[in-house]
Amino acid sequence: MVENKKTERYFFIREVASITQLHPQTLRNYEKWGLVKPHRSQGNVRLYSVEDVERIKKIKVFTQDLGINLAGVEVIFRLTEQIEELQREREEMRKQLEERDRKTGT
Image (tube, rainbow, N blue to C red; front, side, top):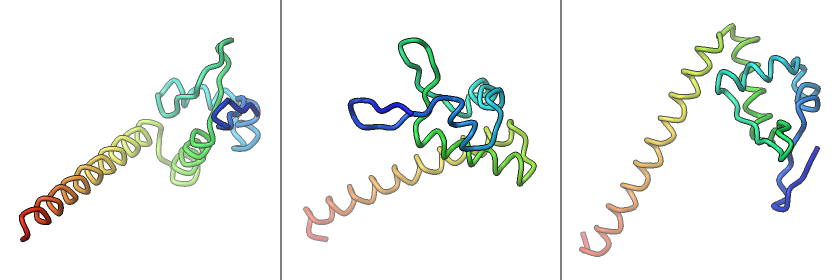
């Protein structure tokens, strides 16, 4: 495990493999598919954040427990991100409307 100046925790691939009970090559495949994007050290070593590890655990549930292939996982993540973005936009619009109504007294 490595910590940076911001006190973020990063894990080496062997640690993530141990935590998730996945082979390191599986983790590399997840990166190749774009499902996880670990940071890289100056020496180009993969460094996984806590969020990366949680995402990998989700991928494992989707693939091993639910039988979804990696293409399906990619779609699920993309759609989830789109939904979250729409929710953020909706919330921002709601705040803007509330502010407008507050200013106009309606």
